[in-house]
Length: 96
Image 1 (cartoon, rainbow, N blue to C red):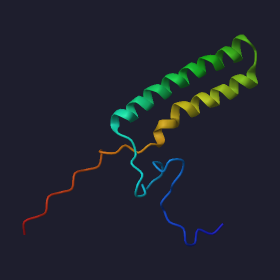
Image 2: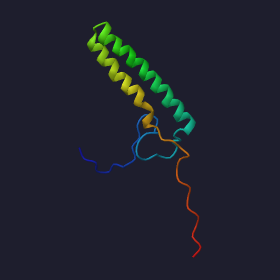
Image 3: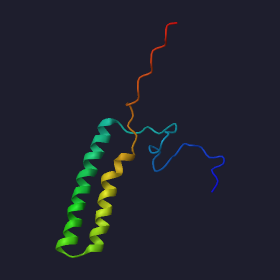
Image 4: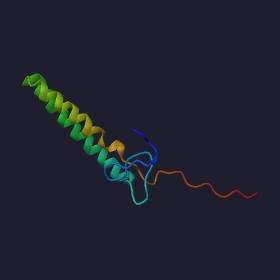
């Protein structure tokens, strides 16, 4: 497929994702990002515990493997968000 005429501005889901942020996409604050990380990590660990129970206690390896993949996806979800307010401050104008 040709990339002719396409921009380098990726926009997936809500627009907060990608290497470049388009106008009008706010991103998330550091506090919100920390909350997302904690929530998703705890959720991913709970799903992983269920997956391990399925695989080793219940002998349901297919469902256990599917839950393991789901747990990793849940735990990695917030890594796509862009944190606003973390940019470097603009340097003061030089006095030449």
